[in-house]
Image (cartoon, rainbow, N blue to C red; front, side, top):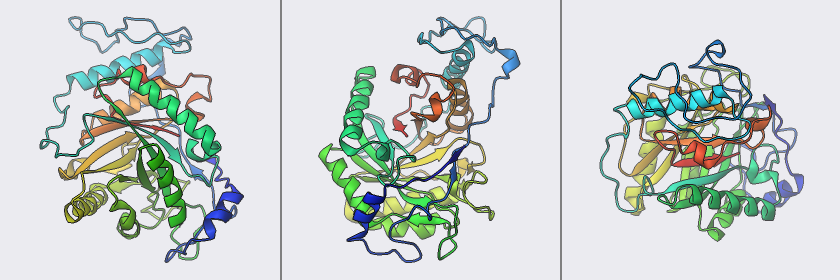
Length: 373
């Protein structure tokens, strides 16, 4: 789907006043500079439509799928109005895949003191204040956005009291562009003042700030060092988005991009170095994924106890598509921890209700990072 990056001009002007231009980029994007981007619907991967009744009734419990062994107990799924039998079967298959996998939980070193995962769950709002169409972070006026934020945090805390919720804002600090820009990198760096604005929101909510990077035709090796002054703060984390990493010459938005384990390892090493140098608590790195080729050679990712890695299922679509993609691209290629993204608009555009916290928490492994766009 083609998403136009519509900017809030007043905010952009305000952010420009005390901002310094970044080398190779512009200080603040304009309407003309913010080009179209793509967040494609996920491709069905596991269950053919012909194999599942096209029922429009609510989900019922218990549900057993064609793949279920006779001796296995049925899995009970929540009954939510608007869920189809296809949704229920996809959820059951995802649950069973996680339960049967010997790779979960991933065997790593014991978490270092100050580690957030796996004892807590992070719930984040994503986007940028400069755009109403790139995520909930900028879609609503700040007071309304923060009120909805509080509501979502409470819902997740109620759904799983065993994992205290840590709120977060996930700011797109480097935005992929459809136009090349002055340096031909097809990306726009957000200003320091904008980062500090969202950081001030995070501090008021005792929340984390994630800085998300869409490199375009640049690289993580080029973009991340600029963010080091922010990443030195103990409550600032990092996200990288392979969807907009255009290694093969296409402008962002025309094809889905890719990153390799080498890119992820570079980010891990940079964060680990900051933790060691400044005596910080372990950092969190979120890597977005909703296709196989978005992350190549995931087995080559070298974990470090100073950095906790989350693979975030970032695709949008109907519930059965989201469950299938979680199973195929997150469960099936274990890294360390898992995340799950919910889209207020794209997930519901065909009339499906937004997935609820209890539904998402049925997945195995249970996502410890939840993001709303």
